[in-house]
Each structure stands twice: as structure tokens, then as C-alpha cells.
Length: 246
Image 1 (spheres, rainbow, N blue to C red):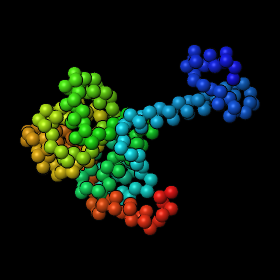
Image 2: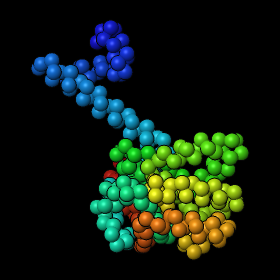
Image 3: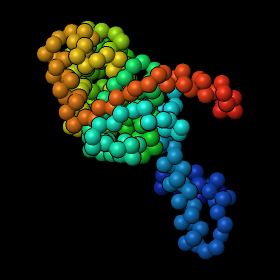
Image 4: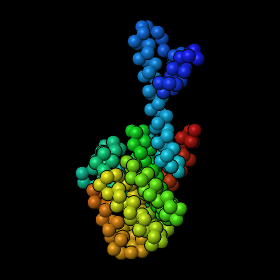
């Protein structure tokens, strides 16, 4: 590709088309330019998805490949197909993933979030205690409005491990504000480690806790996780099938 053509691509914001020129066989003018632009668009979409995944802040990548949904009891009105197709995000509905520690709740939340990124949706993953700290720090620094505006632009907010660390009164109020802002405008996936009836031990105020739960469970699908530890089961399968680790 000539320097002049590269300059034209920069001016038109087409990026670097040189690699695609080498990949396309010339049959006629229209076919040649069409296939080059199609490859450029495909790469741009790939890079956009990578950016969405990075911005989501997943602790580690998880997918639905090999994930067993059978131990999960789904509520009436939600099929497995609807769950994995992410219909709930388009409907701005929430998911509450209830079950014992280690039953695969976090894995599923990340896998659904990662799939949402591949569909071009904006996702953010937080351990709830980390979000509480981030909100308080932003308030102290005077950047809370900026943070809440960014959260308001999400399609899906994932709050993991609700219940591990009691929050301060201020943190609880800020979390409540975030969840209230999401209400009927965005989707939230929540993975609690406490029964809903014990959330007041985390948020400290019975009335605020009740209002928070009310907003979460309205337009929500509650999934019940049963069985033994999902992580333990994975470890056993890897031990029996060493090739799965490759």
C-alpha cells in the first residue's frame, strides 16, 4: 500500500487496510473494495468486543462451554434458552443467583456477562465490597457524579459476593443509590452469600435493606443453585481427564 493511500485511509478514519489488501483476491473493482471493507469492519468489531471485555473487569474469563445448568432451578417463565440468549438484559430484568458458596454462581454471572460483551453490550463486574469502597472513595474525591454516570450507561451490572463484608452506613446508601438508578433501566446480576432475610446485617438499616431488595426482586428472575461445590466438581473432572487442562 502506498504512503498516499495510507494517508487517505487515515483522513477517512479507515484504519490500516494494508493487511486486508493482501488477503483479498482481485476479481473486479466492486468485489475487491467490498471484501476489504468487510474485513476491516470485522476487525473493528473484534477490537470493540475486546475493549468491552477489558472494561468489564472480570476477575477471570468464564464461558458457558461445558457449564452444567441442570443443578440450577429456574423460575417459572424463564427457560434455559432464554437465560443463555440474554433476553433478560433486553427486557431490563435482574437475576438473583441464590445458593451455597462454590455452587457456580460467580462462574455463571461472568459467563453471561462475557457473552453480553460479545453482543456489544456494556458490562461491569464488581465484588460488592469493592464497589462500596469505590463509591465512598469517589465521594471523598468529588468524582462520584462521574462514576455514577458511567454506571448508568451500562447494560448489565454484576454485583458478586453480596454479604461477605458489612458495609458502612454511607456505603450502603451509595449502593442503594446505584441500584435505584439501575431500576427498570438496566439489568443487574446479584450473587448473594446471605439469605435475603439477613441482608440487614450487611446494609445495617432495615428500611433501606427492604427498599433495596424490593427494587432488585421486582422484574427479577431468582435462580436457585443446589448440589455440591461446582469448583470441587471441576477439580475432580480435571483429575480424571488430564487432557482437559491443556
